[in-house]
Image (cartoon, rainbow, N blue to C red; front, side):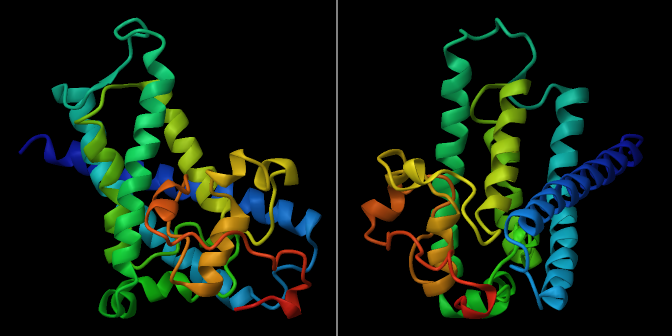
Length: 249
């Protein structure tokens, strides 16, 4: 019982960290959008306000299990997170990052498809798709039930797959950046990457925008592997060059 206040403090601290990370990352890319694509979010002030409110609630949903696991790692030796760089071979560092991204991507693809079942869509996923079109602030704009499906992924993986703390930080950074950039309404990556062989397997804003246009396709998070295997890949959006008033909902 003596540990309960410390655990609660850890949960609240992690919630604050996730909330600040969201505000800084989404705010940074929203500022970039204002500079690079002025007027793109014109008339979406009310929507952006809703996106921020849902996202801050999602930060709480993400922060609670993350704070518990962080406390357990520090105080009880839970998890397979390691700090000694030589505890595993150096070649394992990039492999562990790829393993986490692949596992997260697989979980996201199938839970995302499940969220598009009519009942679950109405109850939960409709919150995310209420962003029409999404903005950089929509990265964590989820109903709490949907946020919970994303909140458990990393806390579970750290019990299953060994990872260095720095590699875990890289995974979280990739997760944050791709979550924001895939929703911001314009493509930040060069055409040679997006339209080239690498782009055939990686998800960027051009790919995820098509999901927000057509719904029943392009469900992946990082990679197009599951979409290609399951026949749900519908290619890239051609809508990015259009002015705000002409963009599809």
